[in-house]
Length: 602
Image 1: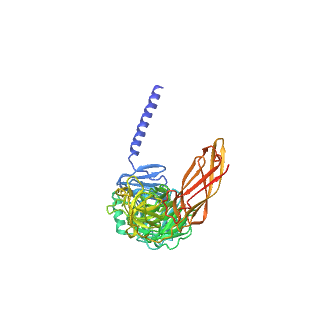
Image 2: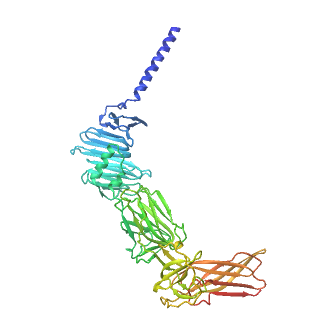
């Protein structure tokens, strides 16, 4: 019995040794041929030309060291790393040269006396196909499919040709390039649309929409790119080789009328669309003689797909008319995924260039503004050494300042100083200095009239000047100035205010007064940041700015809610006073009707 147990134990040791030997051998050998070799029409060979090539079978990834070969069959995959290279051969019918971190799966391989059919799926990287079927065959088809993350499928179909399929590494773009192909030999289909890819032509396809327009490829540059890829050298994205960088600068001077929201229009090859919900008008916002688009609570979108160049940078020039951070530029990749978001930083009345740079190409963008002017855009190419270029304005602007409302030019920086002349709205002037720690500017206006004006942003608009960097000036002594004639006999506006009614609500000792009034502007232009002060007994006070007061000869109805006070207005009578433009900042035809007081007896 003991002899029997010793024999069993010896056999177990022998079997374990043989198993270990087989394990060591399998770690270095190439994949075994498929178990079913009865149908050789579905078999091919993989030739590893550089290390880092693999056969993928049943979720197992087996290396194929160079310069070995390995059999593959339908259902297998071929995978190479960034510096790897492998060639898949199906007799003399098909070769597929796989590089640049490529992965190719075999869906179908069959050939007989009547047909040659092959179907592959390109998961990543680059694959150079050479399809050489006998023209006498009744059916000859090579298909290469690709699927994007959103489910969009691109299908390349060839009937006998040499072509290149490349998935970009940093962008959701796939390129198909015809190297040797007649008009009907090669096509690409996406989103239900099929387009031919003859020799010397490239098309891209993205997760959104149909294949691109045909691009005439620089075949020498493509062959050089292929040479570097085959030898494992680092290369640029193939899209940068096929596409030159976009170089476009455009203002909107070609616009004579604005299409309605939702209807696209083309500017320098870029498709623009104004979106529903906003207000849009044409206006020369920066006085350069060109039309600009005024946007109020709206958005304009950009579609760069019709630009036959690579867009990796975008500069949008705006003139802001609202507070900072009330507008933004957003850029999107070919899958309509957000790449970057840039917020408006400028104050009201300033021009700003919103700029974005990225190695991922832009296919779409959107500009949203609370209130401002869209002056133009620039698709800015990189510098000659390949670095991102600095922002480029769509408007070559000279520094300028102008009045937004009628302003009095005074002999000294004081409201009681003598008036030299009145500067009508839109009067150009040059700032020469400023009063230290104050808002007064010393300027020279048209006809060389010099004096002081209030430099608040609601009264003036300046571009290209750093007002805080202006030299400080001392106010002149109080003397009687020499009065010069007014520059232009422009009719002045007349502001007026009328008290309509009021209500008072009390909660215990706390009372709040709401005043209803009519505001009038009999001028021809809108006035910005008009101050109104309201007082009510016993000590309620409100000072507020009307952001914009358009011409209103019939009056605008306004509601003013005063802060709560202790005790009611009637003590025993109730007096309410309203003043418009209390500091006389706006030049008017008549200053006498800017204040009104009314008393109600208790």
